[in-house]
Image (cartoon, rainbow, N blue to C red; front, side, top):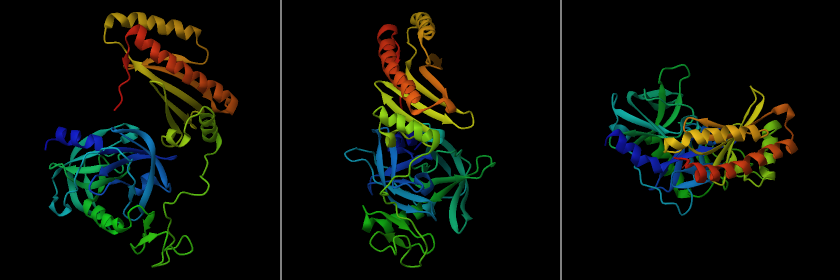
Length: 366
């Protein structure tokens, strides 16, 4: 298969994953009806948010974690038809083989980078890894490493900071081993002990937190009785979103990032502690194809900005964006509700108006 064929095959099977503190990638294995990702992507969460080309954002249950091998299995969405991609054979890989690393770097919806295997069996902390020169960035973690046959030969796991395209993928042999261990208990929350490699379940865990085989402290991916709440400005933002009728869990898009839909507009909210600001950006639509309509559109945007209070219309490349910003020390729940409610209402209003009156195009989403 050529690279383009691989990209098209895998695009619907790639899953974007987010928690309160991170974002990453997963991929669906139809043979086992499981989503595979990294343990460090799901963290200590028993529930994550996920989205794919074939379904909108929803909550997903973490079923299995393996800290030593950095693996996690997630329950796939029900009633969604996802394509079949196959696991390859680790023993068939060689130094110099061409590979494609697929994932969601920096929160982007889908990217694929081609490279070669630099060393097929680099050992780190007693675990073999495939060293590759294909670019792996934050957010790529948990995505598949694919050979030229279109088979998964590894899972993108980590990079060496400061290294020039120095990435590492866990070989597929470890994925197969973990699947064989877990499948007899499929559907149950479980974890693999990082000391003795035994499978620990709710039915055999000692004193609720110790491996029954070696006594090592472990943690099952079980939903807590009380969910850990964010603090500070992050808590204020989530309180505001809840007050405005949004599902806070689904809105989470990593550390200090949230995204929601309002009508046809996609709204991203970000808090930057380094810059002390909370910003909201509503991506409305795209510039019209008919160039004769762009000048009157610009004039309308400028006139509207003169009227708006606390909001700004702008163009970011081809996208028309409605934005607001507030200094964190000035932000209370009450002022934040007023700011974001105004953003949500006007975003939906302008999105409809711009498409109808100025021929703007519907926002493209992957």
